[in-house]
Image (cartoon, rainbow over all chains, first blue to last red; front, side):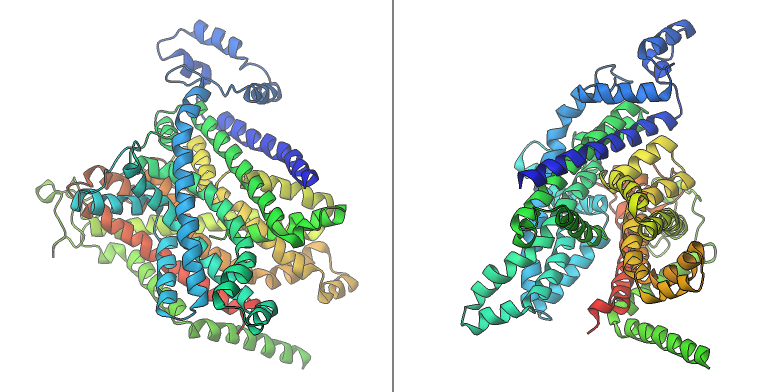
Length: 330
Length: 289
């Protein structure tokens, strides 16, 4: 197990390097001169040139990339064009809000999605199954930010029972978390339903029933354990979608999280802030996916027993890949 | 004669798939909804009662009525007409960005799967890197770097979907390339390009078609999100997300300004999802009942 985790951690390094290269390249192709932006509009040409020298902007791109990585490893993601303060401080100040929102929405999605999925699979073609199907179809069809606005119209404007902006109390959390979580919940409902249906038709379920086990034990002990394994991977991917959805939803609910910061920075052309935000979100997303993969391997004894040989480890990576390929179709 | 037998068999297989799709009531409903949507949008210059930028301050911010089916916005523009015209932009972006994703992701996936070895490792690690960034965040950052506008939005949404298509193509090609007929065509001297384009590609399209129909839905939503946060399509261009973005500040007093554009997105995405699910059921042999 440790060997597998270590291996995955080492494999993380090239991915994160690649992500920083992508982020660095974005800053490169963005029109505008960072030195001019930092110096302000009324700075003289000499001052800008001097600043350019100080920032090392005249160095070749490779040197600057290496420096960017080096600085990023030390927690320096550049300076904000508007406040001239280090980008990382602002990002880290805002990040907990976005992270909380993503966690809450994933929690809602996992709770409702898995429950609905089980009910809908065990009562196939019943009223509840049809309800779950419609619930899931609506969920994948509604844009997250539009659902957020509709929630505001209904619960804040019409009924006036929930606050429409901010993120200070648990009452404020409800609508944003539901808006972001509903879509993920719909995806998880579908995934749980199909994976549960597949498991229920297996021989060992028939065996469990034949030996006189109660339906509850058959479903929740025997079937669910196996059916949930692919769902976990989807849940991890949905966490990433939750982070992305949070970025857009924060604008709807005026939540001062990382997403709103990035959107505001895009509008004020404060690119280092945008890139820093992307890098932080990508890192968190990658780490969460790694945790999910480890959990996945830990929960599935078929995979757990495969650790030893090299060929088997490769096979393991491929199986998780295959599930992911299926998972991100939505 | 064998040629004839082959072609007749091929036809019957296509007919069988078509039949399977037509039996799925939800999928047919989705297809009809989409066709209706496309017709409405395509005929918007004829059907729309007003121009998309026709301002009339006397009727500003009116709630839906017989004259203005979806009400008017803060400049007195007819929202129903703007939704119709906006649909042209949204649907075009959806389709073209999927095309970009298919072309780039497809080539990467096919090359990786067909050549295997080091090519596959390198290409799939690149895909892993793109996968490490949630797709909406990737689209946002590309759009932020390139700037707004229809073409840049298409590029951003297209690139952000590359990993998905690369993976779908790769797994489809991997299962196809080890089959005997590929070996046979290589034995008669077909080159790599010929094998890929003439033999492997047509036979691995099924999962790709499913993914593409779901992908158009995804692309429309992503593009709307981009416009909503101020990237993507800029006002006064009536893209659906831009309409929502414009109506956002009036949400308390004039909710109709954000309700109807959202319904347009929802219906289109719903139709595409139903079609995608129907195609998956019809084309995927594993799900054959």
